[in-house]
Image (cartoon, rainbow, N blue to C red; front, side, top):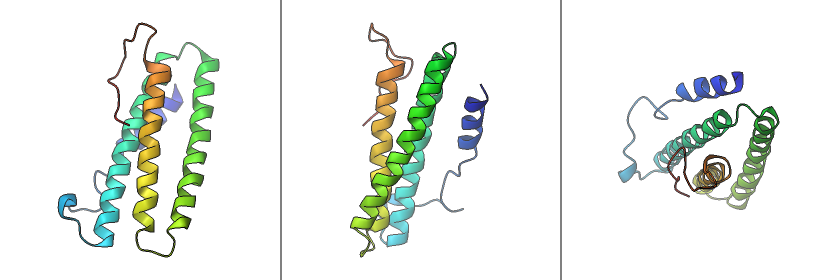
Length: 136
């Protein structure tokens, strides 16, 4: 599955940190530091979501129609997340908090999507799961 290989390669190359130095997020004070930490949290949530997405696609790889449906749903969800969090950014556009509010919105929706992927495609009728239940 070329899609799965592409996802794995894309997220394997994500930077572990927004800069070359480790960010002390427990003591972030400036807007830039807070935004960098929020970006790191988002990247972690996105990597986790893609791990669950890849597992869902792999689990259902014999069903081309389902794989295509999952991929289409993911693409549409990504558009929704962008539009919704853009609206959050617009709501806070006059303040320095706008960046972290938008990033937090994306993180929250990403965690919810990860849970939805898990619940919809990785839990069997018997309640068994290929991956642990993700946090929401």
